[in-house]
Amino acid sequence: MPPLVLAAIAAISLSLALLAWAVLAGPDGAHRRTVDNLRRGLGEAVAAGPDERATVPSTLQSAGRRLTPRSAVARLDRLLSRAGRPAAWPLERLLVAKVVLPLVTGVLGLLFVSASPGTTSVVMFAVVTGVAYFVPELLLHSRGQERSDAIKLELADTLDQMTIAVEAGLGFDSAVARAGRNGKGPLAEELVRTLQDIQMGQSRRQAYDALAKRTDVPDLRRFIRAVIQADTYGIAIADVLRTQAGEMRLKRRQRAEEKAMQIPVKVIFPLMLFILPVLFIVLLGPAVMDIVAAFS
Image (cartoon, rainbow, N blue to C red; front, side, top):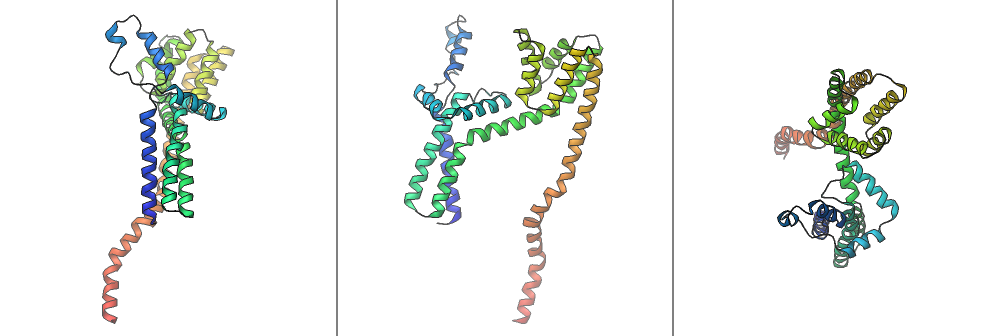
C-alpha cells in the first residue's frame, strides 16, 4: 500500500479518536456539583443555565481512574497545574481520553491491519495507538509551554508595575494585588490566586512556594526566592523589586537576541532541502534541455 494512503488512514484514525474524546468526555462531575452549589438560591433560571452539558458517565470515570496508573494520574495533574487547569480539560476528561483514544484507535488499527496485513501496517498500528495514548500529555505539555513563555514575557513589566506601586507607598501585598488586577494573562491570574491563598489562611511562604510550583518558571521561582529572603531578613522590598526587574529585562533582551541568532541556523535546512533544488531546476533546466537537444 502506498505511504500516502497509510498516512491518510493514520490521520483519519487520529481524527476519529479525537472526535470520540470530544463526544464522550464532558465536564467532570465535581465541576458540575461545584457550579450547582454556587448557583443554589439564585433562581431557577440561573440554576438551569443553557450552557450545561452532559457529564462524563460514571462508568467511564471509574474505568479511566482504574486503568490509568497512579504515576500517570500524578503526571497529568502536574501538567494540568502548569497549563493553568483549563476548564475544558478537567482531570476526569483526560483520564477518560487515555482510555477511549487508544481503544478507538486500536479498533481502527486492527481493521486496517486485517485488511492489508504486513510489517508496515503493524508498525503504523503500534505507532498510532501509542501516540493516541499520549495525546492528553502532549496537549497539556504544549499548553503549559505556551503559558510559561507568556509568564516569562510578562514578568519584567509586572515587576516594574509592582516597583512603582511599592515606591509610591503601597505594601507588597497591595502592589501584587494591583498588578494582578490591572494585568492580563496567566501571570496576573496566578498572582490573584496567590493572594486568595493567603487570604484563605496560608502563610506567605507557602503561597509563594505553591505559585513557583504551579508555574514552573525559573525566572519567577528566582524572584519568589528573593522575596522570601527579603521577608525573612528584613531587606527593603523596593530594592529587591528594582533589582529583579532589571535582571528580568536583561534576560528578556538576551532571550530575544538568542532567538535572533538561531534564525540563520534554522533557515539552512529548509533552504537546502526546498528552496535551492527548485532554484537550480528553474535556472539550469532550460540549459540542460538545450544541451540534450544539441547532442541528440
